[in-house]
Amino acid sequence: MFAYIGSRTTKERKALGEGITVYRREKAVWEKIQTLSCGPNPSYLCLNEKQDRLYAVHGDYSEVTAFQVGKEGHLTELNSVSTYGTNPVHLVVSPNGQSLYVANLETGSLTQLALEQDGSLGQVRQVLFVSGEPGHGYISHPHQVCLHPDGKWLLVPCQGRDHGVGKVEVYAIDPQDNHLKEAFVWTARKGAEPRHVAIHPNGKWVYLVNEKDSTAIFFHFDETTGTLEPRQMVTTLPDDYFGPGWASGIVMGTEGKAVYVSNRTHDSVTVLAIDPETGRLSFRQNLPTEGKQPRFLDLEPGEKRLVAANELTHTLTVFQIQEDGTLEREEKQINAGSPVCVVWKE
Image (cartoon, rainbow, N blue to C red; front, side, top):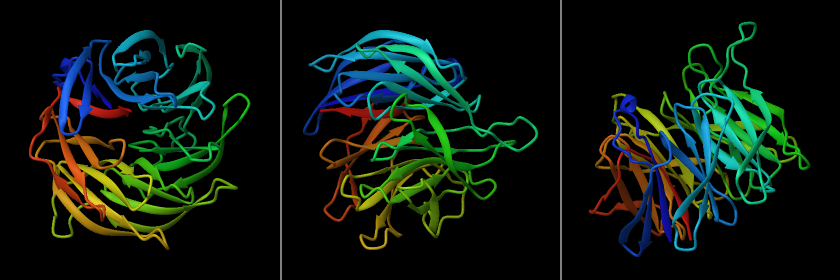
């Protein structure tokens, strides 16, 4: 399998990244096969369903770039286009593979870009602004675009920040043109700053991580109406820790046994077990990443390992996933300049 690592590259970020780094991964061996310089901050990445095209946003800027993925894992740049927004932070390919959705944090917008037959990026099809406080023209800083498994809904956690509204927007996806239409809005408590969600394989349970108050919320999702009903809120930090927290990523395996949350500042990963009958969360484990600011984490294919990207210490920490979903940290870390995202090709 191959691991693609997005990074920060700019002086403003005090970064050491050189672009997108490609590793060939076999058992416990990581072999670097390519480092591709492709513009500033090629941070968050996604693959299409066939895994023959990769897309990268350029954090702090206004572009997204498409790449061809070769059989041996190497990337070849296809083209770059504007997102018509500032600081794109997340992206995902539409269910029918004909569009790319991008969340632009700084300008509070969602952009839908056409995907051409060769996988390159086409024209802008839609730009939606995510509203903030009423009457002022403020925006709410969307931080993720997450597809529901049934392909009918797009969930968008929004941080809110100073003049926005912390919330999760649910958009219905038009199956013909992929246009988005607001279907439901859930509003968070002030200052929580919703960041990312993970959706259970059953499609009915949604888990949200809030950045600033370091909490995870369990929702019931109505697949007919797109509504979210909160059922439970838990901390992502140990109950004997009273310092600052800064929650970031949240991921879940295909069996839906647990969610894994990365905590910046605390520099750790937390395991929250999922009750298979009710969907409720229970705190199982918290482990240090032995690196600073684990901004992102992901499960490798096969889901036997979890990888956390430590942005400030330029390493990847690898955890082995045990039968009960808990983690055991591997001793060796992988070097990577200012890593902020990892995606996998089998």
